[in-house]
Image (cartoon, rainbow, N blue to C red; front, side, top):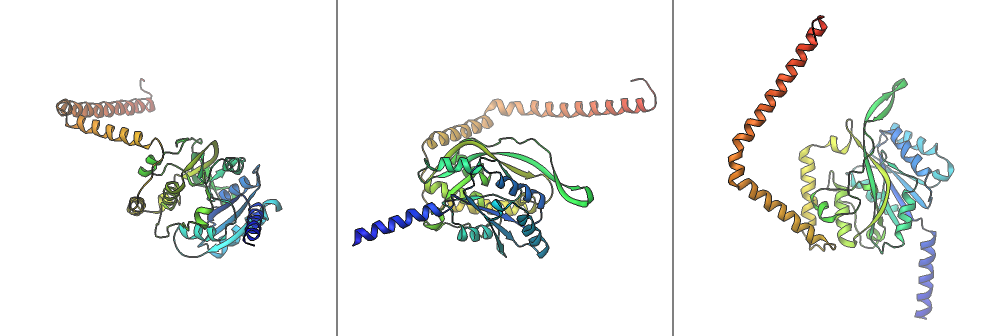
Length: 337
């Protein structure tokens, strides 16, 4: 009897795995940047692997913004529109809508894709292919970074302008030790096994004003490790001006959140991946070499000379600027160049 029940339970579990989508995509939005949001949806409609669902988490949006988001979703082709679930979330911090998304997600993996970023057509496909060999680890692909600024388009339409080419600024391979210093990975680079949330009970820290992504990356990577996906699959768009998490919060808020993330990571034993000891030793050696240089007699004796060189460079630059201004003034008066 127990054997028959076990076989039935296993069959039901396998059937459930087959009907679940591969990826649940959590997309936070406040409805304030509709053009980037439309771009983000367009990227999803072009995915070569359509085995996903999308939870659009509308966080603290007013009625006008919420209606605009709903209208943008309604404009999508049926193939994508039918995958989207619109969820209204009120209150809390940046982690609150993500936790609401986790409660509703049905996918075998979960990814967070903000409403102003871009993913290439093989984003889902690369995660799906790599998941077969991931052995329960996080999946991490490569993401480029691009700067942009808000801009008013014709007829007073709110738009944006890119101000740099996309550049792959971060390491192609995940470096846990380096991530203890600072977050090195845009969030849409990761696909998390959903069992991390459903079985281990991990949730986003709603006490954090920022750094909720870094906190989750550290906690989950320490638990189950990271499998690198050797493909460039997304573009993280960094706002140089306008509203963003970087610009909307003070340095004090950032410092407090960063300190909380590190305190949490440092409050329990840490199992490091292979190769970490060499990295730590190299960092310590570099630090010791730097300390010895600063304390050396040669460095101390060279400081007056270094200061004189810096002063001379400033004087030289000042004189060069004065000459250029003088020449422009002569030219404007018809003098000799």
